[in-house]
Image (cartoon, rainbow, N blue to C red):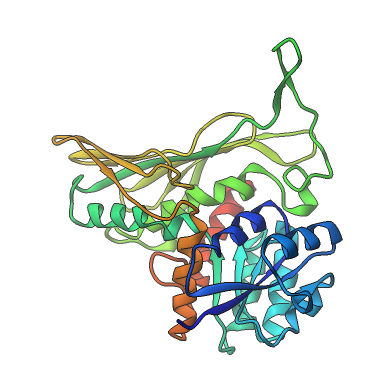
Length: 341
């Protein structure tokens, strides 16, 4: 079987999970890595058996590697735009970790840079490639829950509370240099976690009648801004202007979980784990109760790598549905802009 050769730019925690997935995927291999941290570079080299000639401590050298088919950008949010542009300049296909950029104007620039290029581009929302998402879409299209009315979707973990040796809870001091809490690095709960329910909201809204991005309004915003100037607990309502609304939340200070509730005129659809699908379970509650299990790879990134590699093998320049086009990424980023500001 022909394989797609991948390179990873930036070797943080997300890159580690992504790299592990190559062990289970047949149509792709992790060929090359790049990091300014020599310890990370050596760890990845050893654990993923990367040949020395494909290990780079300069990002630019990875971009110049002629043996790569696609580069996965796993750098902090604030660096995405610059390295997307450099990938385009070096004629490299791109998968960029979410959010694609930190503001919609940057995505607009990328769209203008890439429009005349024969290059693949996608934003890395791994949950979209898990088979439970297509199952949910099919259930909705089959009118299993009736007509779509609304959805509630959240992503949040309390990472700001710790327990002392006596078991008492204590709030952590925000680290202004950590990427999650540094505004200059694109920190904040909305950009880090809120982009998930936003992307899922627009995906479902497109299944309704009279959908138009121009009709979208972001209402009833509630943002708790931390000491470092980024949001740590945020909520909003997305009104799609066609009788479908989405209520979303993202938090670093509350355990909101990863569930989604989709309301229809006849029944409700509950997704227990929307984003990682560690234990995929879809429940339908209403006139006829039902529980649906969806099997897949243990590592959710396997689905993403396998499907996107197939796209490249088929010479596609955009991901298979329900993956996002660059136009979708732009429109979602506009919603994030409105939520943050």
